[in-house]
Image 1 (cartoon, each protein chain N blue to C red):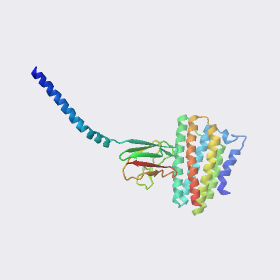
Image 2: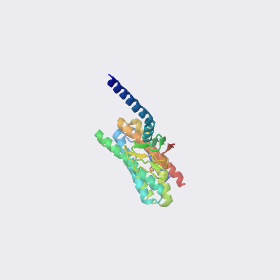
Image 3: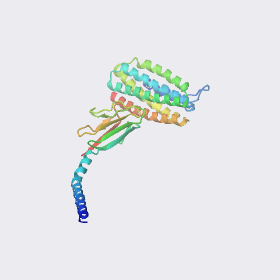
Image 4: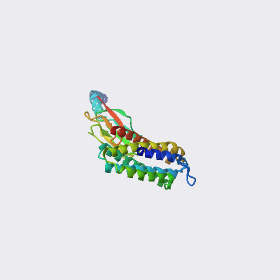
Amino acid sequence: MKLKYHLITIATLIAFQCSAFAKSPADLNDLEIAHVAYIADNIDIRYAHLALAISKNPAIHEFANTMIRDHTAVNKQALALLKKLGAAPKDNFLSKKLLVDADSLVNEMSKLRGKKFDRFYASNELSYHKAVNQLVGESFIPNIENSEVKSLFQAGLKIFKAHESHADMMVKKLK
Amino acid sequence: MSVQLNRRQFLTKTIVAVGATMVSVSPSMAMLSSKKTRQEHHITIRDFEYAPVTLEVAIGDRIIWKNEDIAPHTVTANDESWDSKLMSQNDIWSMDVTADMRTNYYCRYHPAMKAKLIISK
């Protein structure tokens, strides 16, 4: 159940409705979507740093370093684009929820060691990337209005799909 | 009059002699220039793929890789005998083809990215 924590959270968020804010991720505007993506990238970077600190598995370290490199590169590109557009990412309900859930998951993961940690990290990376890719592909990209932001998200989605495949390989190797 | 004819004859003979010499050396010159000819090949890294994924090259050719992706990549021989190290977006790396080089390569950071070179004889 804990291993599916993020998947359930994201699925809940997709169905989430709130009268005070956007009713669903599909209702977020471009700047709010950019903020969610930035937070999602930073969350995965945070998980990667935890993996580097706890795991002794070289394959986990290689994957974690790739996550740090790639998500940092995407964030750098996103911030440069927003600067060019004269805009700043906007906080929103979905970003807040992702951060709260990430805190809980980090607390759970940091208690694990050895193969238990490695399997949890790998499974979470697979679930997390699957959920985020679905969100980006089905809710965000179709609703982004600015063409440059849309192109960046399309490029980002290709990166995250490669991560999903890599995480899948890792999960299978750790079984 | 006889002097002018002699000059013409002299010039004609000289031109013919020079022409014959050029014909006799031109095959050698052609061989020299073909030995020095080296081709440049361009491989693009885009959408987590090397394009073209298989490339035929000759010894002495130069291969130039360019990373067009946001994500950093590498161009690394399977046995790590040659390695571009980290290539950020728009970075370029090149290498000359040698007879004994490893021809299969991949990206260190994204192991599903693979490609190969075929060295023609």
